[in-house]
Picture 1 (cartoon, protein in one colour):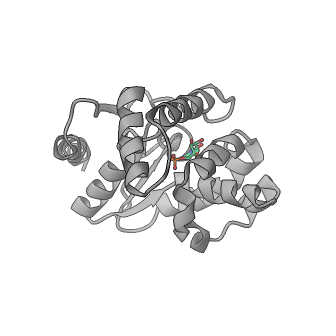
Picture 2 (cartoon, rainbow, N blue to C red):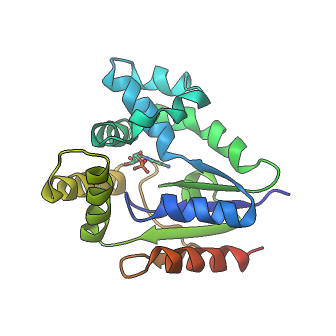
Length: 201
Ligand code: C5P
């Protein structure tokens, strides 16, 4: 069975948590597509050429825990504006989406560019302050020395870059179901997402 769930939205809106829970609930595979851009961003921080890094990306590169730092996130959003980087990553994502047994992909352009015919599309969002608060707690728990203001500025810079780029900007697909997680618990957000997907099965 091929069944694709596209989950898009800005940084730290809860896409990752929701995507993992939806995938686990339905027994689907999950791909966090942000990791593709982060893996390319990390290679570029180490001196690689962005397009060559995207073309040579190995799935094993996605398992590197150091991809989750703010510096790599910024580098990812910088290389994500390059058309040839994005096109080098399309096939991998589409193959993943079409795998037998169902797939959940989360990112910025899944429902609009990568899988415009996805069976279910969600757009997960929350206020910038709320997202920064969550990201700040996450990073503080990992022992990173950052202020809330730095994290908020970082979230806003990435949002602006993701929304305003010419190729595959962050925008909701016209047929996406919106979930604003600002005032929802994790359990409520997950339940809303599962209901929206269930309605499409
Ligand atoms: O989701 P995450 O924060 O890991 O993504 C890192 C960056 O990768 C984003 O800020 C965005 O610029 C880029 N990205 C993208 N398209 C996707 C997923 C991520 O442009 N589908």
